Length: 639
Image (cartoon, rainbow, N blue to C red):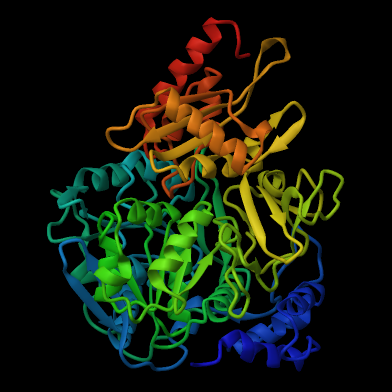
């Protein structure tokens, strides 16, 4: 068995003032956040960062917000991808029809170079924005790399979003080029998006060029076809544009469920450093590995998965619906070594009595990553039983905001079901009280007290950083407040309890919703649960639980009592909901996170804007919560 890269790194760290090799991981973590310069010097050395001009320092020494990373350095994300020749396959595209397409490293570089030349002929230059409206296919990766190679700024949306939802994100960027697909696969059907592409073109007056991916061009358009855009190899060696370390790489978008989506800007060097650290050290990824994380272009995991190319791994895409067998099929077909899915997908696999290791050939699998929501202890046990000790289960937490993770699995560190193994190196994460006190074995606010390379350089169209500061640094000046409730245990592990902006505050006791929901969701009759708390007239507090149930199950008095008992026994008597209500659906963001705040707003009678509805996977169910709130107010209860 090969030695994990993290252990090799520990020896490099020791040469830079870190603890001696073999020291506990906790010592290595403490050094990594205490001596930022030494730690990130070790990372960039170990991971072989590519520089056209080396930086004069790791940071400029400024405090958050506003710390600049790798000042004076010049590089390009794409230069690191193609820093040296590689043989074999770079990208694999799967779809739900069973079709598999491969792109070799040589072909990938040729297509990126040719598309970059086509973009240049269309007038795209450094700093311009190129947007992609695409399913998770190899063309999306080529489009991003070609854009970034020019020093242009990339932003993407999946074709699962309708045109209106994509426009609320793209129009703020004033893009000069649109790369769009004519459709995508979903549950055995071809979803035609040609009308949406037309609507995007009409709604983006700044466009100078459109490139259409698909068998059929957009009717009546003068758009360039993908085939014509990537044909031919320009003369001379491919040379990505050298840009400053802090130059914008891409714009990611917030969920848009509580207001217009915010454009979050990240830098070339910051992303390369953070993604190499995350994938090389904590996912133990190397050349030749096969990396598939189910995602769409709407989710930061698409961006993190691109980091597999930085490591020399083969990146796998999937155009289709994540049905209960589909992703395991991809893992088998692609001989995947690193697989990433959501806790919901694992729960669904368990609920239909799937036996992944028995029903699929998963002998290549080494790491199962899981993020998007809390991985419950029960599902973690099921995964471990099904896949065995040879597969490391890495439950992670992070965010679009930093396009990376804060904590997750660590090679050599035991992971307890229901907990995240440890804080990752270079992430100065703590659970804080309102008095800025670091808490152990107590629930507190997730804060980051030292800068990370992939923290945003700012928000788009926020020249004075007012919105950026308000989003993360208003609550604790000079400290990043992420908006989650967590516990950092005495063992160094992390438990995530839910969003702090949806805090339950019953009788002065603050609680996270995740623990309560887990207790209910571990019952076989409950598919999903959501708990919110609302202040009522007269000083009351109403804490209902909404549940969706398995087929054929009714919410009778017996099941209600079981749910209450489970919460009482698994959490505490004070966490027992006031009412248990059968709901037609639980709303989520488009990346699968439960939406407590919009449900609270609906129960209060606040309308959902059209822009917000496009950011919710089941906007139709919001009417149920509005009617529930109306009935409650008619009794004079909810304020």
